[in-house]
Each structure stands twice: as C-alpha cells, then as structure tokens.
Amino acid sequence: MEHKRLTLFAGHYGSGKTNIAVNYALALAGEGKKVCIADLDIVNPYFRTADSRAELTAAGIDLISPQYANTNVDLPALPAESYRLVQDKSAFGIMDIGGDDRGAYALGRFKPYILEENNYRMAFVANCYRPLTRTPEDALEIMGEIEAACGIKFTCIVNNSNLCDETTPDTLLASLEFIRKLSQLSGLPVWMHTATQAVAAELPELDEPVMAMKLQEKYFDLPTQKSGNRPMWA
Amino acid sequence: MAEKVLMKGNEAIAEAAIRAGCRHYFGYPITPQTEIAAYMAKKMPKIGGVFLQAESEIASINMVYGAAATGMRVMTSSSSPGISLKTEGLSYIAGSDVPALVVNVQRGGPGLGGIQPSQSDYFQATKGGGHGDYRMIVLAPASVQEMASLTIKGFNLADKYRMTSMILADGTIGQMMEPISFEDAEIETYEKPWALTGHGNARKHNIVNSLYLQPDALERTNFERYEKYAAIEENEPMWEEYMMEDAEICVVAFGIASRVAKNAVVAARAEGIKVGLIRPITLWPFPTKALRKAADQCKRFISVELNMGQMIEDVRLATECKRPVSLCHRAGGMIPSPEQVLESIRKAQKGE
Image (spheres, each protein chain N blue to C red):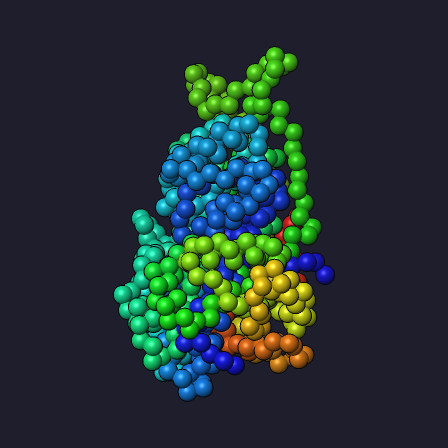
C-alpha cells in the first residue's frame, strides 16, 4: 500500500474515523515508519484518539491531543503543536478530524500547508448503516459539506460499513453496492474497506484492500443487548 | 430479520420522535445531548417540520408549552443544568395539562458539574423539581433500542394523560452506538378536543392556562389531576426482572447502571449466589408492586446508582423498610464497575 506523507480521515460523526486513524497509525508504525497522529476533533468531547494513548505511545507514535481531551472541559480548542504535523515533514502525519462540516472547520487552518506540500490523501469514511448516510446521495451531501467547510477535496473513500458487535462478513458485503455508487457519484476511488480482525478474517477476496482493525477498548464492557432481551415497544 | 441501523442513543431519540409524529423541536445545545438537536436540524427541514434553536433553555420550554397547547406532538431536550432552567416551564405545562416530551441526558452535577454520565437528576425528575403539586411520567432507557422505543412510548403516554413524559437517560446511553430497528413501533394517536386549533365560531373557544382566580377551582384541578396520577400509578409501571425466580438478593438499578449490574448478577450467579435484578423502566410511576413482592422473597436489596443514593429512597418506601437496602454507587460522572457491584453482592450475601 502506498502511503502519502499526510493522511486525513474525515466523515460523518460516528462513522469510525478515530478507530481507523488509530489503526492506520499503528500499521504505519508497524512498517517501521516515523508516525505522528493528531486529534483534531473539536465537535465531540468523547471517544478520542487520546483513548488509545498507551497503545500509540508503546508503538513509538507521536500523539498530539487537545490539552483538555477526556476532562470535563468541553472546549473546542486545538494545541499549537498541531502545526508540527504539517511542518515536520520527516514523519508520516495522520489527522483525525471531527465529524461533519462542523468538525472539518478545524482543518481549514492547515489547508495552505497541506495544499502547498501536496502529498496527502484525504479519506471520506463512510458507514452505510448510519442513519444520515443510508444512501450514496446522503453521503455525497455530507462529503460536499465537509469539503466546503475545510476547503480541501477528498481523494478517496474508506468503507467502514458496520453494525458494531452485530457485524458479520455479510454486513460488509451488503454495503458494496452503496460504496460503489458513492465512488461513482463522487468520482473517487475506494481506498480500502475496514473491519474488525474477526470479521476481516472471514471476508472473501475483495477488489480493494481490507484493513483489519483492533477497536479501541470500551469504557467498560457492556453486555450486548441480544435479541433475547425483548425490545420494549409495549 | 428487521432492518437495522447503527445509531447513537441521542440520534435514536430524535429519529423515534420524528416517527412518532413530532414535527416541532425547540432546544438549546448542551453536551452530552447535542446530537438530538443536530439530528433534528438536519431532518426537520426535509420533512416540513420545525427545528428551532431558541435563545435559551427557558425560551425553548415555553415554545414547547405553546406548541403543545395546539395539540401538536412537541419536544425539547437538554442535559442536567439545562433541565434546571426548563423547570419553571415544566410546572406551567403540568398546571395546564398539555402533553410534551422532554429529554434529559444527564451529566454529573450539581452546578455546571461535568460532561460525563450521571443519574443524579432522579430526585428532580421523579419528585417534581418545579413548584406545585405535579408529576411527570419518567422513562429510563437502558439501551439505544430503548432510547427509541421509550421515546415513542413517551409520546403515547403524554397524549393519553395530557402531561409531560420525560426520558431520563444519561451521557453513556446518549453517546454510545448500538444497532437498532424501528420495526414494531406502535404509534398511538389521541383525540385532542381541548387543543387550541381555531374554533371558527363552530364551537366554544378552548382555554389553556395554569392560572385560577378562585382557590376552590384550583383545588379542584389539583384533586382531579391526582386522580389521573393514581390511575397512572395503577396502570403504567414498567420494569424488567432478571433471574429473580429464586433470588435471595435483589439488585435494583435503572438505565446504564442496570447494564453494569446485569454483568455483576451473572458473575455472582457463577459463584453460586442467588441474586436477581429488578430494573425499573418507569421511575415514576415506580414499580412499587414488583419491589413489594420481592421484599417477601429476598433478604437484602442493593440499589446501584450513578449518584449519591436517590432511587434508594423509593426502594425503601416500596419495600416498606422490611429488608435492609444498601447502596452501591459512583458519582460525579464516574460509573461503577461490574466488580464493584459484584463485591456489594458478595457483602449482601454475607449479611453485611
């Protein structure tokens, strides 16, 4: 897989950007590369890149994270050291960007550097099981809103279609039609599919590469609400 | 198999509200429930509905009051400090007998507190909060699926009894994602002859108001309202029982605490401890009968909460203090671990 100096993950909130950014960073580090990852999420104060701090640090990855990440301060501010990502070209840089156009505004300030260096890949992370990106047309709309907010065009799509713990290989296979249509509508290639290691191991050969992911640990282990636990409609 | 979507708890509330026929959302953003407003902002314009971000929580609850008076399905959502601001409006809505859905995705308090999950608004939700004699139907979802189903249920009950239904969730369920389905949703509709819809001189005009000039008239409305509340206490309590058949220890927990407690109950059963769980789904009306029955069977109760011990008072009342009730809790945005709950079950087993 060819790597660009900068990789930007953006998309609808809850599409899986952080898990993908963390796993991609670990994969790059695994190839012996010098890696820096920045948490640029100014929208949602939860589920952050910093949740994987121990693992990233152990892999020798440089983590740039807002000072108040994982505290009670819900402050949409980014640290000055974020610029290291675009200015220190000796490392591969990964940007985990907040959801939707609101999150992408944070990227705008780095636009001049990114476009000038022109060695980046900006991936739109899509999950067709998320309610506001159920159709390729809906996803395309969000894509356009993000591009307008940050002033940078996407270069590819990452298919992260999943149903959390209920994901099976069929869940991902059923998303292929969606992702092909989105690719066609946007004119952008599907860079890769992403799935948990368990699901990825059972997938048949696909046209594009599959990144097998180890997901961030949950805050605590919740028992899955299986179908035996009747839904409370009555 | 039902078609599933992957939703955050907050999104599930918003989508369920739209499916229940809500076309009027008034709110003001606050973490950790902002996704409800964001979802409504995206969806309402596409379906001819109203999304309005008011200038404050107080303004938004009064918009709810006004829209509810016209008989529309209407809602607002907030988190703990924002609900405190809305409380005056909740009292006026109760005094005017109009239906509304109010969502509280709780965070740690008091004061500004923090943005991590909490259940410390139990008193505020179940005991009134605002001034005057009134109740709200309080529904406590424990999963993303229930965020959706109880929102629909909440609208149904609000219309049925002409009062506020509150979804009392917490930051965890608001933020976490689970696959859910909207099949089987039962949307009830009720005639609203009291609503302010324009009379065209064809009928006497309706009045929606909470002011009474004569004290005896005000007393009468209070008595009538409490007859309604008594019927709700009789007919509407909802709860789940888990491994209660032979239980000697009863864990009581709602919402996210019940998910943690269920883990602990399973672990304790593996150690041979006869323990079960009662999960109140309606916090008002509280499932008093279920707990009273359990008090005949169980020797000890444990209330598991994300607060300093609030529901425990209702557990003691419902069991008429027949059995000791201990508290297992974290506060301030922290969540008890299954191990902490398991340890409290072990202690209860030893009679501590």
